[in-house]
Image (cartoon, rainbow, N blue to C red):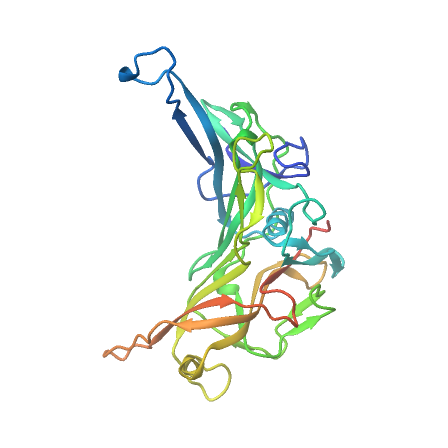
Length: 361
Protein backbone atom coordinates (compact mmCIF):
# COMPACT_ATOMS: atom_id res chain seq x y z
CA UNK A 1 0.00 0.00 0.00
CA UNK A 2 1.26 3.48 -0.84
CA UNK A 3 1.59 6.45 1.54
CA UNK A 4 -1.65 8.09 2.71
CA UNK A 5 -2.03 11.47 4.43
CA UNK A 6 -4.02 14.69 4.55
CA UNK A 7 -2.74 18.05 3.35
CA UNK A 8 -4.40 21.38 4.03
CA UNK A 9 -3.81 24.86 2.71
CA UNK A 10 -5.21 28.36 3.11
CA UNK A 11 -6.87 29.77 0.01
CA UNK A 12 -6.88 33.52 -0.55
CA UNK A 13 -9.57 33.08 -3.22
CA UNK A 14 -12.21 30.62 -2.09
CA UNK A 15 -12.21 27.41 -4.07
CA UNK A 16 -8.88 28.08 -5.84
CA UNK A 17 -5.89 25.87 -5.08
CA UNK A 18 -2.97 28.25 -4.35
CA UNK A 19 -0.50 25.63 -5.54
CA UNK A 20 1.89 26.03 -2.60
CA UNK A 21 1.98 26.50 1.16
CA UNK A 22 0.64 23.05 1.99
CA UNK A 23 0.59 21.85 5.59
CA UNK A 24 0.18 18.28 6.79
CA UNK A 25 -1.83 17.12 9.79
CA UNK A 26 -2.00 13.56 11.18
CA UNK A 27 -5.60 12.34 11.17
CA UNK A 28 -7.22 9.38 12.85
CA UNK A 29 -10.52 9.43 10.99
CA UNK A 30 -11.53 8.89 7.40
CA UNK A 31 -9.31 10.49 4.76
CA UNK A 32 -12.05 10.73 2.15
CA UNK A 33 -14.51 13.66 2.36
CA UNK A 34 -18.18 12.94 1.78
CA UNK A 35 -19.48 14.22 -1.55
CA UNK A 36 -23.19 15.03 -1.55
CA UNK A 37 -25.18 15.52 -4.73
CA UNK A 38 -28.75 16.48 -5.56
CA UNK A 39 -29.54 14.93 -8.95
CA UNK A 40 -33.08 14.94 -10.33
CA UNK A 41 -34.61 13.87 -13.60
CA UNK A 42 -36.43 16.51 -15.64
CA UNK A 43 -40.19 16.18 -15.72
CA UNK A 44 -40.93 17.42 -19.24
CA UNK A 45 -42.40 16.40 -22.55
CA UNK A 46 -39.34 15.60 -24.64
CA UNK A 47 -40.74 13.33 -27.31
CA UNK A 48 -40.52 10.21 -25.14
CA UNK A 49 -43.28 7.97 -23.84
CA UNK A 50 -43.65 9.59 -20.42
CA UNK A 51 -45.24 6.42 -19.05
CA UNK A 52 -41.88 4.70 -19.46
CA UNK A 53 -39.72 7.32 -17.78
CA UNK A 54 -37.98 10.64 -18.03
CA UNK A 55 -35.53 11.43 -20.83
CA UNK A 56 -32.84 13.39 -18.97
CA UNK A 57 -31.31 14.08 -15.57
CA UNK A 58 -29.39 17.05 -14.22
CA UNK A 59 -27.37 17.98 -11.18
CA UNK A 60 -29.06 20.68 -9.12
CA UNK A 61 -26.44 21.13 -6.43
CA UNK A 62 -23.46 19.46 -4.78
CA UNK A 63 -21.27 19.96 -1.74
CA UNK A 64 -18.56 18.21 0.25
CA UNK A 65 -18.14 17.85 3.99
CA UNK A 66 -15.41 16.36 6.12
CA UNK A 67 -14.55 16.03 9.82
CA UNK A 68 -10.80 16.55 10.18
CA UNK A 69 -10.21 14.42 13.26
CA UNK A 70 -7.06 13.54 15.17
CA UNK A 71 -5.00 14.32 18.22
CA UNK A 72 -4.29 17.95 19.11
CA UNK A 73 -0.84 19.02 17.91
CA UNK A 74 0.07 22.68 18.42
CA UNK A 75 1.67 24.36 15.41
CA UNK A 76 0.96 26.21 12.18
CA UNK A 77 -1.59 23.57 11.16
CA UNK A 78 -3.71 23.98 14.29
CA UNK A 79 -3.33 27.77 14.13
CA UNK A 80 -4.73 27.78 10.58
CA UNK A 81 -7.79 25.83 11.69
CA UNK A 82 -8.35 28.09 14.73
CA UNK A 83 -8.03 31.20 12.55
CA UNK A 84 -10.98 30.09 10.45
CA UNK A 85 -13.07 28.88 13.38
CA UNK A 86 -12.73 32.18 15.25
CA UNK A 87 -12.14 34.78 12.54
CA UNK A 88 -9.54 36.86 14.36
CA UNK A 89 -5.90 35.89 14.69
CA UNK A 90 -3.82 38.21 16.82
CA UNK A 91 -0.21 39.09 16.13
CA UNK A 92 2.18 36.43 17.35
CA UNK A 93 4.88 37.59 19.74
CA UNK A 94 8.10 35.88 20.76
CA UNK A 95 8.39 34.28 24.18
CA UNK A 96 11.45 32.45 25.53
CA UNK A 97 13.36 33.18 22.29
CA UNK A 98 12.03 30.45 19.98
CA UNK A 99 8.35 30.18 20.97
CA UNK A 100 5.53 32.42 19.80
CA UNK A 101 2.11 33.09 21.26
CA UNK A 102 -1.07 34.62 19.88
CA UNK A 103 -4.79 34.90 20.54
CA UNK A 104 -7.73 33.64 18.50
CA UNK A 105 -11.13 35.18 19.24
CA UNK A 106 -14.51 35.33 17.49
CA UNK A 107 -15.81 38.11 15.27
CA UNK A 108 -19.36 39.01 14.34
CA UNK A 109 -18.40 38.83 10.67
CA UNK A 110 -15.17 37.11 9.69
CA UNK A 111 -15.74 36.39 5.99
CA UNK A 112 -16.75 38.67 3.14
CA UNK A 113 -15.50 41.91 1.61
CA UNK A 114 -13.99 44.25 4.20
CA UNK A 115 -13.76 41.55 6.88
CA UNK A 116 -10.51 40.02 8.18
CA UNK A 117 -10.81 36.67 6.38
CA UNK A 118 -12.26 38.17 3.19
CA UNK A 119 -12.76 35.48 0.53
CA UNK A 120 -10.32 33.03 2.09
CA UNK A 121 -11.03 29.42 3.01
CA UNK A 122 -9.31 26.12 3.76
CA UNK A 123 -8.57 23.55 1.09
CA UNK A 124 -8.02 19.94 2.11
CA UNK A 125 -6.32 17.39 -0.06
CA UNK A 126 -6.63 13.70 0.81
CA UNK A 127 -3.69 11.72 -0.56
CA UNK A 128 -4.85 8.13 -0.82
CA UNK A 129 -3.69 4.75 -2.03
CA UNK A 130 -4.98 4.10 -5.53
CA UNK A 131 -3.78 0.70 -6.66
CA UNK A 132 -0.40 1.07 -5.00
CA UNK A 133 0.19 4.69 -6.04
CA UNK A 134 -0.49 7.75 -3.88
CA UNK A 135 -2.91 10.07 -5.66
CA UNK A 136 -4.64 13.27 -4.50
CA UNK A 137 -7.91 15.13 -5.03
CA UNK A 138 -8.38 18.79 -4.11
CA UNK A 139 -11.41 19.80 -2.01
CA UNK A 140 -11.58 23.58 -1.95
CA UNK A 141 -13.56 26.32 -0.29
CA UNK A 142 -13.76 24.71 3.15
CA UNK A 143 -15.24 26.75 5.95
CA UNK A 144 -15.83 25.56 9.52
CA UNK A 145 -19.09 24.40 11.01
CA UNK A 146 -17.75 23.40 14.43
CA UNK A 147 -14.66 22.47 16.41
CA UNK A 148 -14.81 19.82 19.13
CA UNK A 149 -12.13 18.95 21.69
CA UNK A 150 -12.51 15.84 23.81
CA UNK A 151 -10.46 14.55 26.74
CA UNK A 152 -10.75 11.16 28.43
CA UNK A 153 -8.51 9.42 30.99
CA UNK A 154 -5.70 7.33 29.61
CA UNK A 155 -5.19 9.07 26.31
CA UNK A 156 -4.51 12.11 24.20
CA UNK A 157 -6.93 14.98 23.75
CA UNK A 158 -8.69 14.63 20.41
CA UNK A 159 -10.18 17.17 18.05
CA UNK A 160 -12.65 17.24 15.20
CA UNK A 161 -12.99 20.17 12.82
CA UNK A 162 -16.13 19.98 10.68
CA UNK A 163 -15.46 21.59 7.30
CA UNK A 164 -17.55 21.93 4.17
CA UNK A 165 -17.55 23.55 0.75
CA UNK A 166 -19.35 23.59 -2.57
CA UNK A 167 -19.12 20.58 -4.88
CA UNK A 168 -17.82 22.53 -7.91
CA UNK A 169 -14.69 23.32 -5.86
CA UNK A 170 -13.72 19.64 -5.79
CA UNK A 171 -10.92 19.00 -8.27
CA UNK A 172 -10.28 16.06 -10.55
CA UNK A 173 -9.55 12.70 -8.98
CA UNK A 174 -6.24 10.83 -9.32
CA UNK A 175 -3.91 13.82 -9.34
CA UNK A 176 -0.26 13.66 -8.33
CA UNK A 177 0.44 13.38 -4.62
CA UNK A 178 1.24 16.58 -2.71
CA UNK A 179 5.02 16.52 -2.08
CA UNK A 180 7.11 17.78 0.83
CA UNK A 181 5.26 15.94 3.56
CA UNK A 182 6.29 17.20 7.02
CA UNK A 183 4.09 16.61 10.05
CA UNK A 184 4.03 18.72 13.26
CA UNK A 185 7.09 18.30 15.45
CA UNK A 186 5.18 18.91 18.67
CA UNK A 187 3.89 16.09 20.84
CA UNK A 188 0.12 15.85 21.29
CA UNK A 189 -1.62 17.03 24.46
CA UNK A 190 -2.69 14.38 26.99
CA UNK A 191 -5.80 14.66 29.13
CA UNK A 192 -3.86 13.79 32.29
CA UNK A 193 -1.62 16.83 31.74
CA UNK A 194 -4.50 19.29 31.28
CA UNK A 195 -5.20 21.80 34.02
CA UNK A 196 -8.66 23.19 34.81
CA UNK A 197 -9.49 26.38 36.73
CA UNK A 198 -12.72 28.04 37.88
CA UNK A 199 -13.89 31.23 39.55
CA UNK A 200 -12.62 34.79 39.82
CA UNK A 201 -9.03 35.95 39.67
CA UNK A 202 -7.91 35.18 36.12
CA UNK A 203 -4.84 37.18 35.01
CA UNK A 204 -5.29 38.69 31.55
CA UNK A 205 -2.59 41.01 30.24
CA UNK A 206 -3.23 43.78 27.72
CA UNK A 207 -6.31 45.61 26.47
CA UNK A 208 -9.58 43.76 25.91
CA UNK A 209 -10.36 41.92 23.76
CA UNK A 210 -6.86 41.54 22.30
CA UNK A 211 -5.06 40.21 25.34
CA UNK A 212 -1.38 39.37 25.05
CA UNK A 213 -1.27 36.85 27.88
CA UNK A 214 -3.76 34.74 29.83
CA UNK A 215 -2.97 32.88 33.06
CA UNK A 216 -4.97 31.31 35.93
CA UNK A 217 -3.91 33.94 38.45
CA UNK A 218 -5.98 33.38 41.61
CA UNK A 219 -8.52 31.00 40.02
CA UNK A 220 -9.18 27.72 41.86
CA UNK A 221 -8.05 24.44 40.29
CA UNK A 222 -10.53 21.60 39.90
CA UNK A 223 -10.14 18.07 38.60
CA UNK A 224 -12.78 16.71 36.21
CA UNK A 225 -12.94 13.07 35.10
CA UNK A 226 -13.22 14.15 31.45
CA UNK A 227 -14.25 17.07 29.30
CA UNK A 228 -15.87 17.88 25.98
CA UNK A 229 -15.79 21.34 24.40
CA UNK A 230 -17.68 22.21 21.23
CA UNK A 231 -17.23 25.61 19.59
CA UNK A 232 -19.82 26.53 16.97
CA UNK A 233 -19.17 29.65 14.87
CA UNK A 234 -22.85 29.96 13.92
CA UNK A 235 -22.22 30.30 10.19
CA UNK A 236 -23.61 28.33 7.25
CA UNK A 237 -23.22 28.38 3.49
CA UNK A 238 -26.13 28.99 1.14
CA UNK A 239 -26.54 28.84 -2.61
CA UNK A 240 -26.78 32.19 -4.39
CA UNK A 241 -26.60 33.42 -7.95
CA UNK A 242 -22.83 33.64 -8.26
CA UNK A 243 -22.00 30.99 -10.86
CA UNK A 244 -21.39 28.18 -8.33
CA UNK A 245 -23.96 25.39 -8.32
CA UNK A 246 -23.69 24.61 -4.63
CA UNK A 247 -23.70 26.35 -1.22
CA UNK A 248 -21.01 29.00 -1.61
CA UNK A 249 -21.93 32.17 0.30
CA UNK A 250 -21.35 32.24 4.04
CA UNK A 251 -23.89 33.93 6.29
CA UNK A 252 -24.42 34.09 10.02
CA UNK A 253 -27.37 31.94 11.07
CA UNK A 254 -26.78 31.69 14.84
CA UNK A 255 -24.71 33.07 17.70
CA UNK A 256 -21.10 32.09 18.26
CA UNK A 257 -21.32 29.52 21.07
CA UNK A 258 -19.02 27.42 23.23
CA UNK A 259 -20.49 24.43 25.06
CA UNK A 260 -18.52 22.60 27.73
CA UNK A 261 -19.33 19.36 29.50
CA UNK A 262 -17.49 17.47 32.23
CA UNK A 263 -17.99 15.06 35.12
CA UNK A 264 -16.38 15.51 38.52
CA UNK A 265 -16.54 14.08 42.03
CA UNK A 266 -19.06 15.58 44.46
CA UNK A 267 -16.78 16.95 47.21
CA UNK A 268 -16.79 19.69 49.84
CA UNK A 269 -13.20 20.18 51.06
CA UNK A 270 -12.19 22.59 53.82
CA UNK A 271 -10.42 24.79 51.27
CA UNK A 272 -10.21 25.21 47.51
CA UNK A 273 -12.93 24.44 45.01
CA UNK A 274 -16.08 22.79 46.35
CA UNK A 275 -18.07 20.93 43.72
CA UNK A 276 -20.81 20.50 46.33
CA UNK A 277 -21.13 24.27 46.82
CA UNK A 278 -21.04 24.77 43.05
CA UNK A 279 -23.88 22.30 42.60
CA UNK A 280 -26.02 23.90 45.31
CA UNK A 281 -25.82 27.33 43.62
CA UNK A 282 -28.36 26.06 41.13
CA UNK A 283 -31.09 26.14 43.77
CA UNK A 284 -30.83 29.91 44.26
CA UNK A 285 -30.74 31.08 40.63
CA UNK A 286 -28.80 30.86 37.40
CA UNK A 287 -25.25 29.71 38.09
CA UNK A 288 -22.52 31.44 36.10
CA UNK A 289 -18.77 31.19 36.41
CA UNK A 290 -15.47 31.73 34.65
CA UNK A 291 -13.36 28.77 33.51
CA UNK A 292 -9.89 28.30 32.08
CA UNK A 293 -8.35 25.18 30.54
CA UNK A 294 -4.58 24.97 30.08
CA UNK A 295 -3.15 22.22 27.87
CA UNK A 296 0.60 21.64 28.19
CA UNK A 297 2.46 18.78 26.49
CA UNK A 298 5.62 19.08 28.61
CA UNK A 299 7.77 19.71 25.52
CA UNK A 300 9.88 22.81 25.08
CA UNK A 301 8.81 25.23 22.38
CA UNK A 302 11.06 27.95 23.74
CA UNK A 303 14.76 27.76 24.37
CA UNK A 304 14.64 27.46 28.16
CA UNK A 305 11.31 26.99 29.90
CA UNK A 306 8.32 27.66 27.63
CA UNK A 307 6.38 24.53 26.68
CA UNK A 308 3.87 24.06 23.90
CA UNK A 309 0.53 25.21 25.30
CA UNK A 310 -3.07 25.79 24.35
CA UNK A 311 -5.00 28.08 26.72
CA UNK A 312 -8.79 28.09 26.47
CA UNK A 313 -10.47 31.12 28.06
CA UNK A 314 -14.18 30.84 28.89
CA UNK A 315 -14.95 34.13 30.69
CA UNK A 316 -18.64 33.62 31.48
CA UNK A 317 -20.38 30.25 31.38
CA UNK A 318 -23.89 29.33 32.44
CA UNK A 319 -23.75 25.99 34.25
CA UNK A 320 -26.58 23.47 34.46
CA UNK A 321 -25.72 20.28 36.38
CA UNK A 322 -27.51 17.01 35.76
CA UNK A 323 -29.34 15.53 38.78
CA UNK A 324 -27.02 14.20 41.46
CA UNK A 325 -26.04 10.54 41.07
CA UNK A 326 -26.09 9.16 44.60
CA UNK A 327 -25.84 5.45 45.38
CA UNK A 328 -26.28 2.99 48.23
CA UNK A 329 -22.82 1.41 47.97
CA UNK A 330 -20.69 4.21 49.36
CA UNK A 331 -19.27 5.21 45.99
CA UNK A 332 -18.20 8.82 45.44
CA UNK A 333 -21.18 10.70 43.95
CA UNK A 334 -20.67 12.32 40.57
CA UNK A 335 -21.77 15.61 39.05
CA UNK A 336 -22.16 15.99 35.31
CA UNK A 337 -22.15 19.60 34.15
CA UNK A 338 -23.26 21.19 30.91
CA UNK A 339 -22.15 24.78 30.41
CA UNK A 340 -22.96 27.27 27.67
CA UNK A 341 -21.11 30.48 26.94
CA UNK A 342 -22.38 33.99 27.60
CA UNK A 343 -20.73 37.25 26.56
CA UNK A 344 -18.73 39.04 29.23
CA UNK A 345 -18.77 42.58 27.81
CA UNK A 346 -15.73 43.59 29.87
CA UNK A 347 -13.68 40.84 28.20
CA UNK A 348 -15.20 41.13 24.74
CA UNK A 349 -15.61 37.49 23.72
CA UNK A 350 -17.50 34.34 24.82
CA UNK A 351 -14.44 32.13 24.26
CA UNK A 352 -10.88 32.60 23.04
CA UNK A 353 -7.87 30.36 22.59
CA UNK A 354 -4.23 31.29 22.93
CA UNK A 355 -1.62 28.99 21.43
CA UNK A 356 2.08 28.88 22.23
CA UNK A 357 4.23 27.04 19.73
CA UNK A 358 6.99 27.61 17.17
CA UNK A 359 4.68 29.22 14.60
CA UNK A 360 5.80 32.82 14.18
CA UNK A 361 3.38 33.82 11.41
